[in-house]
Image (cartoon, rainbow, N blue to C red; front, top):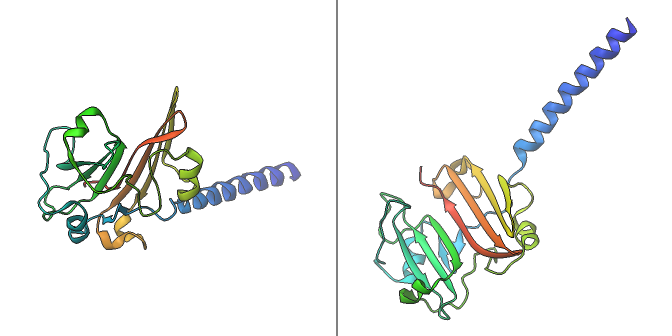
Length: 192
């Protein structure tokens, strides 16, 4: 009898613990996601026009969404703005910043030396600096030699208190580090 009661109690505790860990996991969320890059608010055509001008040429290919590319004044950084299919003119829902290659020197330069997000993310930051901004609730973390790739995700972003005004169902942010320094990041609203 005592053994059966003890086994039953252990099983009950295991169920309660599993339920609580599931609740804690469900509440784990990226802190204060970025929605601004160098003065451009995602999906806001007015802010985009004020920074990159109107009617930026969109590049279309089979690999990604239509996008416009720009380079920093010093030629060291590239900004890519992605327009979802069906978006209004000059409306971008995703942004990427990366170290510029030699081909970026032919791109239109913007009067910005270093592209930074509204939360202060910029190339050259460390993994600890990025995680201090957004927290430990990552979707995935991958390591390959000297490279580390961290991805955050917020599902049901269209019902999220901070993101619902954008009306997209999924927000993501990805950060790529080489030898501990940020060399590429991309964030925004995934095309459904």
